[in-house]
Image (cartoon, rainbow, N blue to C red; front, top):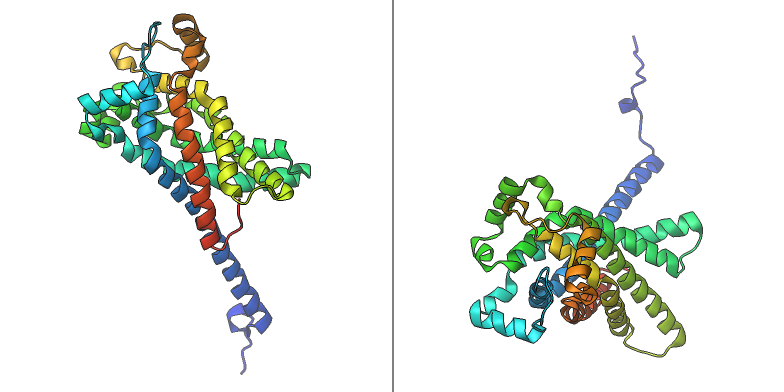
Length: 315
């Protein structure tokens, strides 16, 4: 007696179905590899820039913390640099480098990596990719990246400001922050940090993207990437210096030692203006400018080169 079987496993697989499965798997593999390259090139580019500009970041934090709550003559970037070299030595210029590098890979990958997808979503939703859309895309990607990496920023700033903590290492400082101030301490200053990152990324990426487009149309320059990066860095500095200073002040507050001068970002800004003067919001501004210019330029040039090597389109 013959028994017929209706099991799918007994049915012959058509060549069309097999090709569909193969193509589907290939598409998934390509998508995964593209995502890896997309975020990886961005993260590596920011890490490369951070390796070069980290000493300027240390100087910026030291300048921002001068004469807290009082007015008086301030040391310039050269004076702080000389002071560090004499008292702490050249190694102090790389305090907090480990968390800075770790953060740059994650933060940089997300910040630059989310820009294009965000721009495509806005383009799909509103049918436009104008300058406003580019600004919104940059702001969104910067804010999300910072919210996720704020703990590494808090750790970096703490190590940069205190040489003794730098000698103990980041792991010990993580344990100290958690035991004395709690888990929430790793998100100190996250509001101003997100505002700063949104403004920074929007001004950097939108300016870079738009200036490349304009220059390409006018055919005025050959070194499009380099010039666009420099313009983006200059605009970013002007926009973000006050938010950067407020973020640093909040992150360095230690409630466990009774050092709570500021309740939030707005309170910090008002207290700084009242006790130190409006110009104090721009403490470390020249160091910020000195750092952001090369940081932005190196990031975009390295990122574009890596994308070219990976066979991807330019930003």
